[in-house]
Amino acid sequence: MKKGTCKKLAVLTSGGDASGMNACIRTVVRYGLYHGFEMYGVKHGYKGLINDEIFLMPYGAVSNSVHAGGTILRTSRCPEFKEHEVFTKAAQNLLDKGIDNLIVIGGDGSFRGAQDLHEFTDLNVIGVPGTIDNDMGYTDSTIGFDTACNTVIDAILKLRDTITSHDRIMILEVMGRDCGNIALNSAVAGGAEYVIVPEAPADVDEIAASVKRGFDKGKTSTIILLAEGKNYLKDELMQKVAASTGRTVNHMALGYMQRGGIPTMSDRVLAARMGQRAVELIECGQSGRVVGIRGGDIYDTTIIEALSLPKDFDRQLYNLAIVISK
Ligand code: ADP
Ligand code: F6P
Image 1 (cartoon, helix red, strand yellow):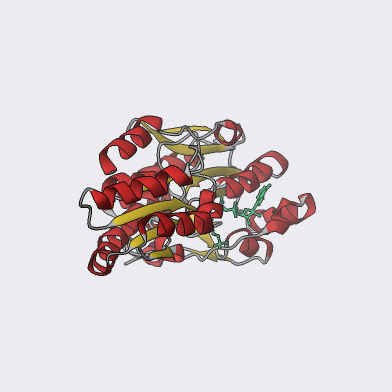
Image 2 (cartoon, rainbow, N blue to C red):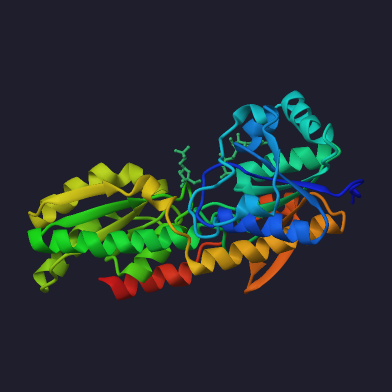
């Protein structure tokens, strides 16, 4: 445990933007000020840390931001931050200003950078999980996941109108990297007929035959949710489903639509609760830890532990999705 020597705290967002990041920044700034910290923001994530884009964040800096998607701090991907010389020099930009506390809001790549800063520099660093993917094993949810799923659900609803009107089939591809959580949860909540995720095998021939059986039974439309981690099946799927049904099969990648937009209540509250714990950890002089949620309770653990835990796949929910959708 390292002890902060002064009451200055900076916050940055890193990696893919996720709705709810602003609600977290707002909490960190306001709760930090409440605890007597002078608050700073770093623009453009680790890139901005390297380039010394560090600025004071008074109370008003986060006004009117709780509802906004994206991140008011901007973000970036920054591969060069993995280099020892680069991140130590970047940390020095904070330390030169007497700032020795940093909260990093981002995903697993961002947490690896946070661990390096914790381990090899004089900064106290705490991580908060901000990513739509919900792909980190130590936490039940991440900031932005709920909003992203709601965007997918809305897309399912709208696409259903068109494919029903035209007697078509839709393959809707959703994000999530190697994690099927967005696809699975959106499929269950949005009533998609099929879901294909990286965590479970997919029998394309069986799906094609099953879609045909569905239409034979009187189904009027079919939506297949395809997780990004299995998108290499797209062409085979389109071709086989079209062949078995004789219908037009459309494909659409929802893409960056899932990242932006007004954060849901659930993401905003999660962001606020996680931001609160992050400031409390800094206040106690903690470092090298991340905030998570388990069974509804906010908790914290080491970054090392967080990064080592594989994401559990909810097989029960997957099995349910298969049973109730066809
Ligand atoms: P996320 O944090 O949303 O998962 P990334 O995986 O892209 O997004 O990580 C954000 C950034 O963190 C990336 O640009 C990555 O290069 C950077 N990063 C910094 N340090 C490391 C590290 N030690 N290992 C991996 N990524 C790192
Ligand atoms: O990690 C969030 C995410 O949106 C993933 O779901 C997706 O694979 C990736 O980021 C896209 O990254 P980029 O913004 O670099 O295209």
